[in-house]
Length: 550
Image (cartoon, rainbow, N blue to C red; front, top):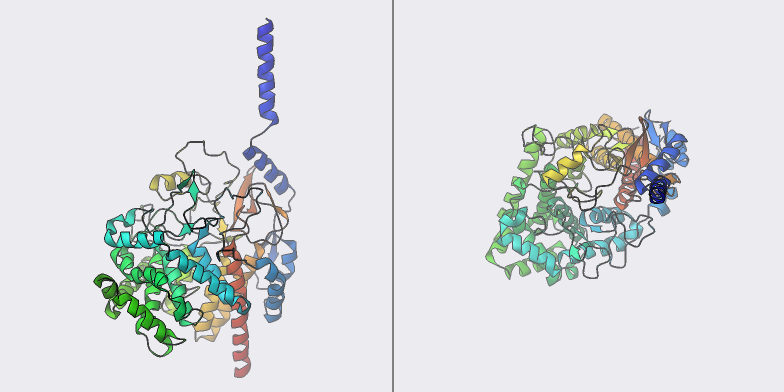
C-alpha cells in the first residue's frame, strides 16, 4: 500500500511539474495572447493619399497623415538616418539580419551572409554620397568571395560537367558564414550546411552591380587583379553551359526550383552590362572602361578557347537575346513561372521577385508597358500590412513561431531550414493556415519601381499617378517599423526597427498582426533608405518640370 501511495504521489508531482513548466512554444503563445488582448499591437491610420495604412509605431502616425512632399521626406530621412544606417563587418560584409539575441550564434541562421542581400545593401550605400567608400568596400568584398579557390572551382566544375547544375551544393554558392575567416559555408555539426545554392538571380545581380561599378568609376583598372578576373572570365560560359534561359533555380526565396522569370532576367541583365563594357561605344565606354576592357581582354586571351569564345560579341549578344526572349515570353504568359501546367506545384504567376527586373537596375529591352504589367501583377500581392512573396507562401504563415516544434530527428524542415525539395515544400505548405501568409517589406521595392516609371514615362498624368502610388507604398513601408513591443514569437523587440515581414497570429479565432522575429532585416533597411532617397530626387525633378511649364 505504501508503494502505491508513493507511486501515486510521484505521478501527481510529475503531472504538476509538466503543467507548471509549459514548454517554450506554449509560453510564447501565452505572451502573444496577453499582448494582443491589450489592443496595442497595431492601428489603421488614414493617409493624406486616401489609403488606410497599418501602423505599429505611434510616432509614425503623424507622418502618415501628412502629404509626402519634399519637406516631409527630408524630415523622415533625417529622423530615420541613424536607425536605417547599416555598418559593414570587419571583412566588409553585412549579415542578413542583426537580430538582438542573447546567444552569439543566431539560431535562425540570419547572421549568415547572402550575396543577394549584400548587393541590395551595396546599391543603398552607393546612392548615399557619404557612404561611397563603404559601397566600394562591400562590392570588392563580394568580388573577393567569388574569387576564393572554392568558388572558382565550383564554376569550373559546372562548366566541365553541366549535368551537375542540378546539384545544389555543387553550384557556385550564394551564402556563407559571416564569422568564417576564409568565407566558408555555414556549418552544422562541423559540416557545411546543405543549402539550395541553385540561385542564378544572386549571381546575376552581383555581376550586374560589379559591371556598373566599373562603368561608373567606383572601381578601376587596378581593382581588376588576376585573381578577381578569374571568376568573371568564367561567368558567361557558366551561364551558357547551364542554359540559364531554361534553367530551373531556387530563385530569391530559395525554395522549390522552377524556371523563374526574375532569375532569367537578372542573369540576362548581367550579360547586357558586360557586353556594353566590352563592345559598347559612347556612353557605354566611359570612366576608364577602355582600360578595364583592355586588361580583361588580355586575361581572357590567356584562357581556353571556350572562355574566349563565350566573351565574343556575338556570343554575349546571343545569350542576352535568348534570356530577354524568355523573359518576355513568360511575362506574356502571366508572370514568374507560368511555363507549367496550372495544376503543377511549380506554376506561379504573381511573385514579388519580379520587381528586380525594374529595380535596382532595370533589364534592358523591357518596355514601359512591360514594366507596368509587372507592377500590375505584383500589385495583386498587396495586403493590409505588406506584400506577399507569392500566394500560398507557407514561410512565416499564421502562428508560424508559436506552433508545436518539429520533432527532433524529424526529416521535416526546421523553421528557417531548406525547403527546396518537393516533399519539404509541400509539407510546409500543408501547415499553412489559409490567408495568413507573411506580408513582407516589399512596399519599398514597389515604391522604387513606381519612381522608376515616373522617371521614364513621357505622360504627365501617368507620372502623377506613379508618384502618388510611390507615396502610398513608402508610407506602408514606414508603417511596418516596430514599436517597443513583441514579435510574433512572443519575444521583446525595440522600437524603430525594420522587420523582414509582418506575421499573422491567430488567438481564440481572431487574427492579429505582429512583426516577424527576423528584425531588423538589413535588406529592408536598405530598401526603405533607397525608396525615400529616390522618391525625393524624383519629386524635386518633377516639381521643377512643373514650375517651368507654368
